[in-house]
Length: 326
Ligand code: SAM
Image 1 (cartoon, rainbow, N blue to C red):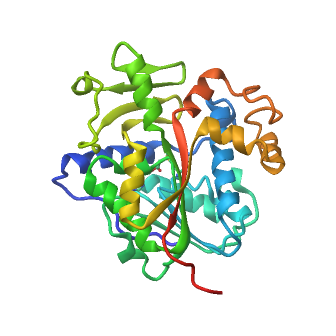
Image 2 (spheres, helix red, strand yellow):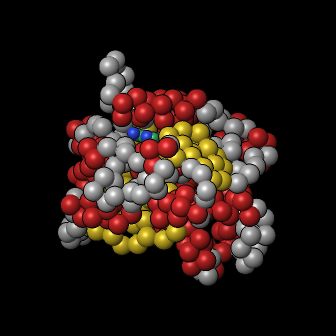
């Protein structure tokens, strides 16, 4: 795996850029947990559930030999999932330098936890702002990709219209016709509903809280101003940084402008109920141990973790056009 690429630095940040920097610093500062720390996490079952959802998406949509673009790849937590799908090539991009370093270490198999055979696919890792940089300029030799993934990260692009558009322009420019874009992000419908149900501007439980500023005291979010709706998100042992609401119906319309058509969207609760019906995914859930035996939904996941799962959705988009004939 080679580093390099766009990078992020310099002075005179605009407000959006410094928000992006804050997000990058937050993720860069989070070091790799030991196995013991991970097992003792108050959200260990939620992490396992999230991994199950990403694994299901990858198993449903990736094919052997696929060329993969992992936007906001983080520390490479999905490398093993892609390996199981027998993909042919992997490019990971993330804004956080520390995460890219950890991802490289994981790919090279040099951590204690990673005494495993080497990954079967070549990989390239790049540190860049996926929502600012024109990635096609960096990746013209690697494109087109068969599948693009952006897990728990696309909402960081909705700070401005320009960034939301650049995110979709990058995906569209780099996917082949018929290529697939899979992802997970907060479910704005649930978040806004929760905000309206609460008396103040903050809600949550023992493992998370979300807080909106007083500028949203009326709790109205006109469709004419869908970008830059900021809230603070805190998830125990995981996240503590600004995030942006992504009104999904507007995301769908914007994606269409970039030739990306909606194939599927499901809140995580619905996703779990639907795909647990399939024996192979129930078996995977049993092995991961997120939901006990895979039949009683919450046998090991706490109610508070299950509530956090309700804050997220999974989506699948397809790039318009016919795949090149074999
Ligand atoms: N996708 C990984 C996963 O599922 O394990 C990481 C998810 S983590 C919640 C969010 C990631 O988004 C972090 O690694 C962060 O550095 C990355 N990120 C946030 N803004 C970004 C941007 N503008 N460009 C690239 N990566 C970004």
